[in-house]
Length: 60
Image (cartoon, rainbow, N blue to C red; front, side, top):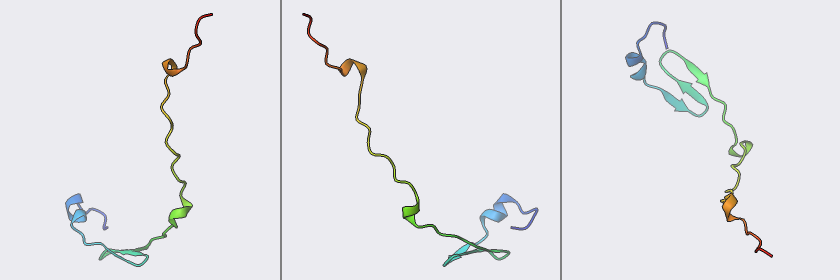
């Protein structure tokens, strides 16, 4: 965007994405895409646990 443009003007500027290029009327920027497998996978669900859930031994 050009220096001095308002946010309203910038918000109305058309943007296109073709292949790996992001373009406006003023600038074109290459975009690097990453393989989804390069990101870590979320951990599995953690089982619920509370201290009072422990089995207490019966009094002797």
